[in-house]
Image (cartoon, rainbow, N blue to C red; front, top):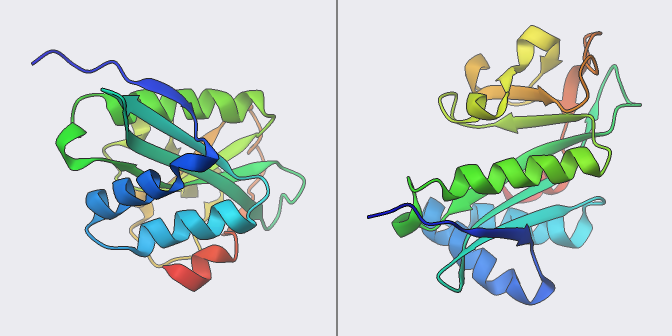
Length: 173
């Protein structure tokens, strides 16, 4: 089966219900879908991107603001959550989605992106273990699972300290 070439674009307001279904199907629970809904309603900036294949939204990723304890001047965002409909996984759709969304973050003037995710997946986009850049995860997770990407080279030349996620992360996850 040839790989699917998705259409990747910003999410539209009328797609919220379908985006919710994508997260529920990908994660097998509602927590991530609840988080997306809360971030969309309360986070500024909120950046949501979808991948559409065969006329349907099959993947979604969002970014929300994070604060870096020792570098509050940096424009930093957290990538979370990201989901691909189960039957469309492992076809390059998630990769295309994240690449396009990271370009959009760079164009919007964001300097740093953090992600708590699979250590074998996110390095393909340039993410590296956050601790090597002096960025500390607020959650008890394996160090290799918390990663950072400098969208502006040198943005993390000084240790940035503890990351503070948007309050929505404390209420729904």
